[in-house]
Figure 1: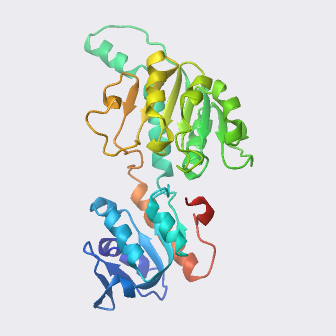
Figure 2 (figure 1 turned 45 degrees about the vertical axis):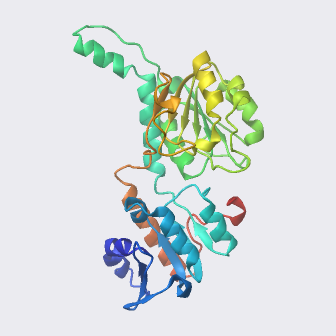
Figure 3 (figure 1 turned 90 degrees about the vertical axis):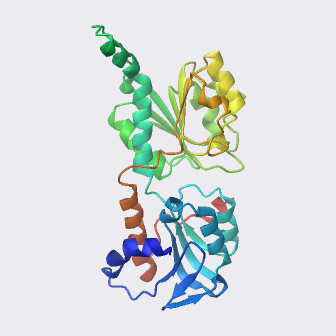
Length: 323
């Protein structure tokens, strides 16, 4: 693990009472084992924790390279929920088992609820009326009167469904299989999407980016969508044909697009999404809730115990789903 990750977690790790030999690496890719420095080509580890500290210190892709250079990794646990970065496929092809993260699910679900409420509630108008000292009733749409379509039903989609259900809204879900859920009123696969879209008031993209989903939110998608719907994307920018989305916004077919992820990040200043009146965008920040770090840590601690005791790991991803 990264040396800062070890400093952060070492007391809790020691408290587990496991017989562990810990190797750390620094930002320059120097691995340290038992007080001596070894090259990555000699690193042979059962469990590699890629924590959010590498992101915070700005060398995520370099850390990916360090992991790829290791002689052997048994399991890699990452901070990412989506595994569409080519690094994960390359690592998986080397036989490394990969566990992704569910730690950001709560934060992203709350982000979606906050954004949806900000669209349905006339908060900006209310602030304007306050500044003008005008007493005026402001009508709003209740979430309980909406129909949500959640595309992707992993940890993020499920955390979102819990919150939407608490508001009394209707929920349809698109997932890999038609396995039913107590959180959803209707469940289908991507093949059922044409039937689900006309009924949806709020569509949330929470699915992986892969060959099947890349660009699937296209002109045909918007043509089937209920007029005045809201689209929220917290998955990957590559899911959406931006030109088709802008056309749908300009025609009024799509009322609002809430976007936290984009084809190119950071989003270039000249991108029309910045200034379109129907777009509300944020800088890939939906994961940044106050409880995320604690959940990432706990997932690692739970999984390292499971690994040491030979139990099934949490969030282990099927290699066939990493493409």
